[in-house]
Amino acid sequence: MSVVELPAMPAAGPLYRRAALSLVPGLGGARRAGELPDVELTVRDVPVDRDHLARYDRVCGFRLTDTLPVTYPHVLAFPLTLRLMTAPDFPFPMVGLVHLTNRITVRQPIDAGDRLDLSVRAADLRPHPRGRQVDVIATATVDGVEVWRDVSTYLSKERTPNGGERRDRGDRPAPPAPSAHWRVEPRVGPEYAKVSGDHNPIHTSRLGARLLGFPRPIAHGMWSKARCLAALEGRLPDAYTVDVSFKLPLPLPSTVAFSADAVDAGWSFALHSARSGKPHLTGTV
Image (cartoon, rainbow, N blue to C red; front, side, top):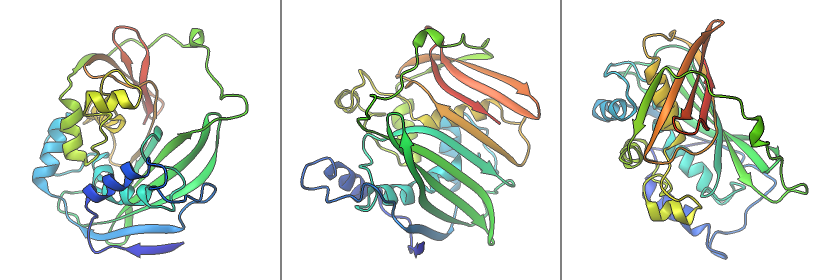
């Protein structure tokens, strides 16, 4: 795998235009549907903007401290992810991919004064009952030591011989007793888009959401994960792994039920609709 070191983070605007053009027949270019790009994108010596960090903390519910929330490097690395996933050699158009899961491992606290080397690559293209899935792996190192790793799994929906496996909704377990109820207002979509750099209109625009099959905008999955971890702030160790599975979209506005239980040496947590009990996210620490 070749390493491409960029002098600075890519600008998001041209990359979003590239993503939009990829949906237009004849303009998206030929894709190698069975291959992944054999490249790792890297930007070194990335500083943390403390004002930006404070805005992120407020949007996601974290306390204002000099220690980065475990989800914050995900947004720092997002321009590299955007560059990787909008390139012609990425096997799927970025628009329309479904974020299935996210796993983050933090090996030690990261201080806002640290300078980070950030890298992103794709791995493990494999079948899924509803199409194909791929991992996008991001890492952060400080002084040559990996301190953070993020694995996001994305699904490209495709026609499959059996039409994909569908779970019987009658088998859905009852949601756990809630620890808290949160009202998630429409402003969460655009506010998180501003701090994350992820301006997918499915999160910020009623028209954009409708064009992609949703009656109204939906919350970013990584906002939901961050909000859950903010609720556990002060009860997590310095080093841990947090896994989440993104279930049904969280429409804006909504009232959600957050649940958290101490299990073994960690936590189990979830977000459900407060009205219907339908799951939006489940996770473990």
